[in-house]
Amino acid sequence: MERLPGTKVYRYAVLTRVSHWFWVIAFAALVSSGLQIFNAAPYLDASDKSNPARRVLSIDSPADGVGTTTIFGRTFTTTGWLGWTDDGMGGRTARAFPGWITIPAYQDLADGRRWHLFFAWIAASCWLAWLVSSAIKGNLREMVLRPSDLPKLWPMQAYYLRLRKEPPAHGTYNPLQKLAYTVVAFVLAPMIVLTGLALSPGIDAIAQPLTWLLGGRQFARLWHFVAMLGLLGFFVVHTFQVATQGLLNQMRSMITGWYRLGDHDGVGP
Amino acid sequence: MKRRLFLASTISSALAACSPIGTALNNNDAFHHLIGSAQGLNHLLIGTRGLAREYPLSAIDRNFRVNGLPTPDDATYESYVADRFASYRLVVDGAVERKHAYSLPALRAMPQVTQITRHDCVEGWSAIGEWSGVRLSDVLAAAHPRADARYVVFHCMDRDDQGTPYYESLDLKEAYHPQTLLSLRLNGSDLDPDHGAPVRLRVPTQLGYKSAKWVKRIEVVGSFSNLYGGKGGYWEDQGYEWYAGI
Image (tube, rainbow over all chains, first blue to last red; front, side, top):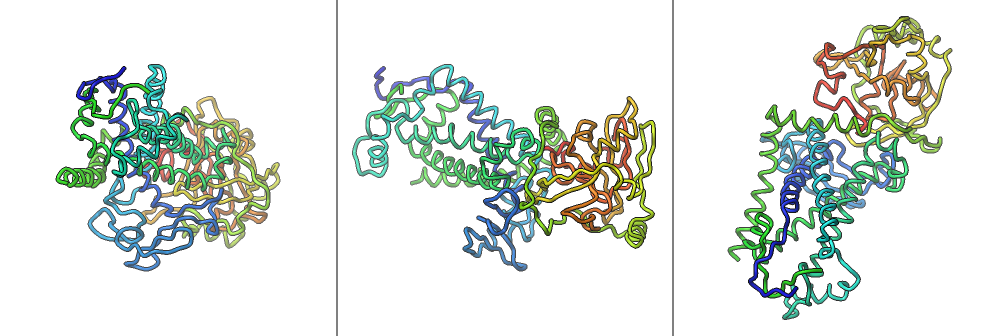
């Protein structure tokens, strides 16, 4: 299956492309509405019921005009950014996350939940549809990290850091891409779905062991937030890579499906 | 370098655009209606199944957090508190064969059950309390709901700043759930006014706003669309989901 650099290959099926872009929209809506929901109780406890003694993160406004963020007991002044910030209506107020990053911009828990519980369906359906179709068509094989990829991880990183001239030989995706995609698709995506479900009292009544395994309801809220940070971290690295590794080729491939092979790109697992 | 600058500005403007675009869409009736459609699906899939976790005594929050509105600032309620609820009656009426008006001693004389369950507030926090009282199913069974009964509405004694009274509603399945209580006691003592004295609904399988405080009347209905804002509850009329199991 050796292909020459410059050859165009049909890399992304319609379902992959459509679910990718729907996922982008859903993820933006979920993060923004999720921060809106967080603002209603701006703290995270590693416990079942709320317990200030096990507080991992809290965002407060100890006085008018002052915002603070406390992580593992260490308090930082975050006035203007977190705790005392943009109220979404042109003013400033005691509020954990600022209005410019929440949906709706102003504080509105009911509508934040309305957005969140709708786009959760979009994001989860896209993930499932893509996962099932890729598994059936066999494309997952070229994406999943295998034991044989492990020794290639550092050489690939060294190549990105310009400590090495050539990347290790690889197929459609390089070892670091495989690592990132595997973590997102098989760790973070299921984690964010399950931790979200565990917050529902109705689901807790149906599947008590789920909430219990996560350490309780407040702990599930903490895991949900951590999974969000993980996905956000992936988003930042992913957009950086897309932009620096041939922006037009990458964007075209996720829109039309056709990707032009680069000097080091292969095809297959 | 130019490309990276272009990229950085594109990403930041895309991020900064989310909130204003989202806020504008939120104010669009058709879109707002569309995203509300998940509610029916969630109710259908999750619904009322299983039992809420019950905890040991050691898990109880002794100073159980007070949620929602403060003690009703109302002459009738104050007179009830003054006479220790001697003149209070819990009325059961609507689409039932037998209407009832229970005094507090009459409710205490019915079979009592106790549960130690977690209260999950829609804001995100949780607290654990020991609730004792009468199963709502016992009260409903005594009233014999008619064939057209679909929902149970709880009329409460508190009002907000605009004078709008608090009310809530459950479907019959949730109302007959074995853990759905008319609680009279919290953590071993009679309910105090802040926690909903003398009778508070307790629905551990849904979020806290369903657990209405200061209940004075239980009305069995076929539909709640002609009550107040028509959405089946005080918070529901303000945009919160009627099905609060999620």
